[in-house]
Image (cartoon, rainbow, N blue to C red; front, side, top):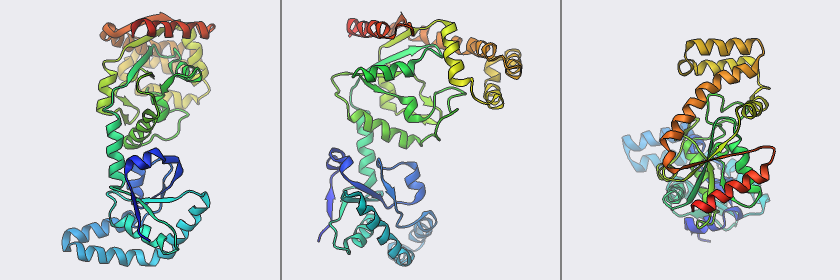
Amino acid sequence: MQAQDLHIEEIIAQLESFTFIDARSEKEFAKGHLPGAFNIPLLDDDARIEVGTLYKQQGRIEAVRKGLELVGPIMPQLYDRYQELLALNKPLVFYCWRGGLRSLISATLFQWSGNQVRRIEGGYKSYRNWVLSQFNKKYSLQIIGGATGSGKTELLHLLKEKGHQIIDLEGIAHHKGSAFGSLGQLPQPSTESFENELAWQLSQFDESKPVWIENESRLIGNCYLPDAFWNQMLHAPIFQIDVPLNVRIERLLIEYGHFDVAELTQRTEILRKKLGGQHANYAVEMLSQGNLQEWLSTLLVYYDKTYQYGSEKNAHRSVSMPFDWNDVNDSINQLLNQYEFRK
């Protein structure tokens, strides 16, 4: 029974129909992998380094021999892991970096049990090429801007509920983009994993329809937006929602007011240079007194100044409108009317 090599486009079209086995090492897998893949390394991190060093020093023949020597003792364990995953009732598809020896050996081991084996032609590298190609496509990006605390992310998800296409970049990055952005979030993915998820979400969209996103900087926490996608953002129209300061403070208190004061103080200290010593000291003092409203008001002087600078810089592609969180439906209709008027 010969292994079936599947082209990446075949894989993407049936992504949820397969169980993926990533035969690469743990560090390679952590950097990025196919959605939902299981990491069952043929060579773990240490073994991979050992084989790679031998390859450089003595060549391919000795490196392959060492690899087989290292794999031999764990073959029953690998075999059992593959069998366990059959319980998911989806065909197993193996891959490594380029679709080479690691996935071939893993697939062959699985094949010995009489199962049909499948591999990704070109390996994970072919998937990464597909990912990067998604960012070169032209999307009708529509950016929602607004000062800190305006509720841009919430607005995005309300648009999604109404059937519109949205990308929650902060949700993918597990970070809200400020000094306080990682509070209450899962650990951030690698930039590569961030790109993988972004590409997958974009691939599900109708490219002829608008894609709503939040106004972001190039770096969201530790995740970089890909060049081609960022360049499209730099030229996309911006819809600035105008929410009163008191409403923004109320919303921010709900979002951050429940965190430990020590944690909030530490994050405030990160902004010391940008706030200036006097304002930073005052903000920290307000935190220590439990006066979170005054603490927030002090921080927003800096955040609003930064927002104003960006707004002026992008005035040529921006339109501002009031947004009333007490009358959400009407405010959303005004936003969509502005989009229709400008397109």
